[in-house]
Length: 336
Ligand SMILES: NC(=O)c1ccc[n+]([C@@H]2O[C@H](COP(=O)([O-])OP(=O)(O)OC[C@H]3O[C@@H](n4cnc5c(N)ncnc54)[C@H](O)[C@@H]3O)[C@@H](O)[C@H]2O)c1
Image 1 (cartoon, rainbow, N blue to C red):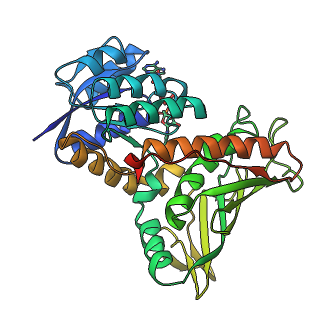
Image 2: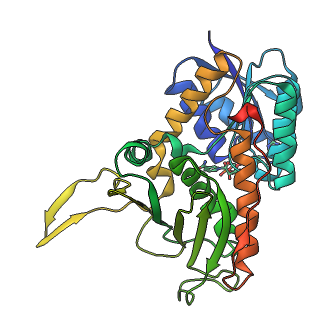
């Protein structure tokens, strides 16, 4: 079966996902496109999906009998309405992060999917599909003993002036928030945020770097440095300290050079290059599940927990180092 996919939001990531579905992956085809900027959808049709139809609205695209499954890659604030419409239509839906911009919005999606009675939503937390994180999880699950601590860092070379302190959580840390729950098979109970002095490269409305400390239900302490003006590169670090040993996320493959009396490896500077292969794997997973009328991978529940945790971290940014409790509702059995 070829899954007929409609894309809502044909900006940077929507265009790139359309390219991988039509030119890289198997089992699916882009048949429909929609964007509030119609010219953007037309351009993707012309460049990538000449047989696709451009729809005036996302709702019309979702309702079309030509569309089997939906990709929501529009701006974050519009995700909820489209995911809810896809669930109401009973169509599998891949939604880029965030699932919704509020925890209440994410909860409405969870409730709708639970009422539907079958998984339909996959959230775009692609790190779970990264070969390095998959290898790290195998080591954490079976080699290093029970996890005690995680030391991690999320560093970007630079961010624009519009990037303000809470965005370090909602836009940047959100990937760590999801991946550590998965990696440790655990949930968070509290968050703290500490600020060292701001870097000279930071902006007026951005405290950078910051250190987020998450405590889990099993008592593991995670400390993540978020440093978005680190200047030297895009660098994701993760080390899990277990009872019997330590496991580290592998560095991205890079040629080692002996050059100019130095032993050196290049460090990436663009986040898009760091997880490029994982986007292919996550969407292929979506296509396989969509062909069976369902979804796999990161769930609406994971998107909801990420939203609750993000909110707690943002509250903790203003709590002068005090811990903010993270209270999760009971997980519906659909997500066990
Ligand atoms: N998983 C990841 O690593 C990753 C990477 C990049 C972006 N994202 C997420 O993907 C989403 C899109 O990001 P982007 O970088 O492609 O942004 P973008 O601004 O390049 O593209 C978004 C597109 O959505 C369109 N749009 C806005 N409102 C709409 C609406 N109501 N209906 C239909 N289209 C609408 C815009 O016109 C634009 O073309 C964001 O939520 C972002 O957080 C995730």
